[in-house]
Length: 198
Ligand SMILES: CC(C)(COP(=O)(O)OP(=O)(O)OC[C@H]1O[C@@H](n2cnc3c(N)ncnc32)[C@H](O)[C@@H]1O)[C@@H](O)C(=O)NCCC(=O)NCCS
Ligand SMILES: Nc1ncnc2c1ncn2[C@@H]1O[C@H](COP(=O)(O)OP(=O)(O)OP(=O)(O)O)[C@@H](O)[C@H]1O
Image: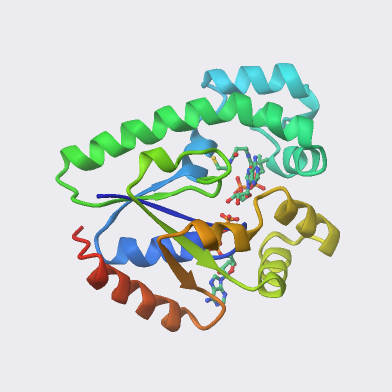
């Protein structure tokens, strides 16, 4: 079974996908794919440099992710432009990893995709899980993890569909406001309820 795992920025998708991984499930992470497809030997890289200029490169020629993030999270047109370059390559990479997981005998594949609903990727999956946190918890965890100011963090949060909307569309919701152990036990329950096998 293909399962889509999503949520808001810093709501805890990676934390939850790690908990599935501990139990042997195959994880496909769209953020990891998005990092791989913009490496200097990939075609998306050339396109990004053409559109955004060499100012978004580090001295070692890799993308300066902090700089590119500052640009695209404060300018919707530029964000959409970047999405239109990166997302087709991300989809191809995820397809390759899915086929590898199935060939290796995985029964369940968990797709960790931040923009599962925004990018209309729900056709890839049979069930969806949304990792939920209260807005204040999300803001605090994002500021802390990425060293962002409140306004920078809010710009990132508002560039996505509101988490409350995602919750309405989910087949299952994991509440990640509490301790990690409380989150883990919800996952164990869900694995039983949906009879998920790695
Ligand atoms: C702008 C970039 C370089 C900033 O990199 P940075 O290392 O700071 O962030 P990272 O990639 O780890 O993403 C962190 C989170 O930001 C959110 N996010 C990233 N890109 C986007 C976007 N285009 N729109 C909305 N939210 C986004 C997601 O919740 C993601 O989990 C990077 O996010 C990027 O290349 N984004 C475009 C590709 C994309 O859409 N990725 C998201 C899933 S495919
Ligand atoms: N239950 C929890 N208690 C305390 N801290 C947590 C909890 N869950 C996650 N965190 C922390 O909150 C931050 C965000 O979590 P995580 O990276 O898993 O989110 P994410 O949804 O994958 O984010 P992104 O969309 O940016 O990739 C991390 O620093 C993580 O360690």
